Length: 333
Ligand code: LMR
Image (cartoon, rainbow, N blue to C red; front, side, top):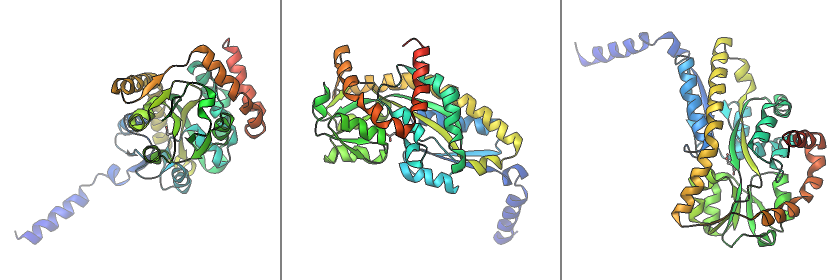
C-alpha cells in the first residue's frame, strides 16, 4: 500500500469512526477573570468535571481563567453576543448592565456574616435579582461566594482619614465609588487584570479586594499595608447566555443543573478557607504589613461610610436594601 492510500484510509477511518455523540458535542466556554487557584477558579473547574461526567462527554466545558479571553466589561458583552456561554462575574459588575439592584451587595457593612449573605442570595432577593437579568438575554444559575474585602495601600491604613487623597482602584460600581469618596479617596475604575501593574507603577495607590484575589494576583508584592476591614463583600453570579441555555436538550440541561448545584455547594464550602489561607500566606511572605482593626477603629469606618446608604438608596432601590436588612435583623443582628 502506498503512503497516499494509507493516509486516505486513516483519514476516512477517523471520519467514519467519529461517534455520533462526539460529532454533536456541545461546547460551553466559561470565561473568568481570576486565577484558577481561587474560590471561583476552583468552582469553575469543579463544574467542568461534573458537567462532563453527568453528560457522559456530550458537553465539553472549556475554562478560560485570568482574563485570558476577556476583561471585566468585555466578558459580559461576549456572553450576550453568544461568543462565550458561561461566566461568573462579581455581583458588582451587574450595575453597569442596568441591573442596579445588584449594587446592594456593594454597600459597606451590609452583611454581618456569610449566613445572612447566603439567606439573601438563596432566598427571595437572589431570585428577584436573577429575574432582572432575563430581559438582557442572561440567565442566572447560581450564586458563588468569594469573601469579605480588605483594604491595601502603600501608606499605613488605620483610620478613615488615612484614605484621604489615595487613588483607590474599584470595580465599575457607583456604590464603590461613593464608598471611597466618603473616605476622601479618589476611586479609579479599572479592570481586574490591570490592577497589579497599576499598583506597581503608581497609577493607583491601593485597592480593596478579597485576600484570595490579592494573594493570587500578587498584590502583596506591590502593596506595603493591608487593613482587614471586612467592610464589603465579593461574590459571583454564575450566568449563561439565555437562548443557548433554553436551546439545550432538556435532559442535558437537567444534567448540567445537577452539576451546577453540586459545584455551587463545593465552591461555597471552600471560599472561607481559601481566603483564610491566602491571608496567612501573605502574612508569612513578610512583604505586606497586615493589620486587624480594633472594634473602635471598625466603628469609625462604619460611621464614615454610613452616608453611602442614603446617597445610593434611590439608585439601588430602598425596597431591595430593606429586604437585605430584614434578613440581618431576623438573624439577630
Ligand atoms: C475584581 O474585579 O476585583 C473582582 O471582581 C474580580 C473577581 O472576579 O473576583
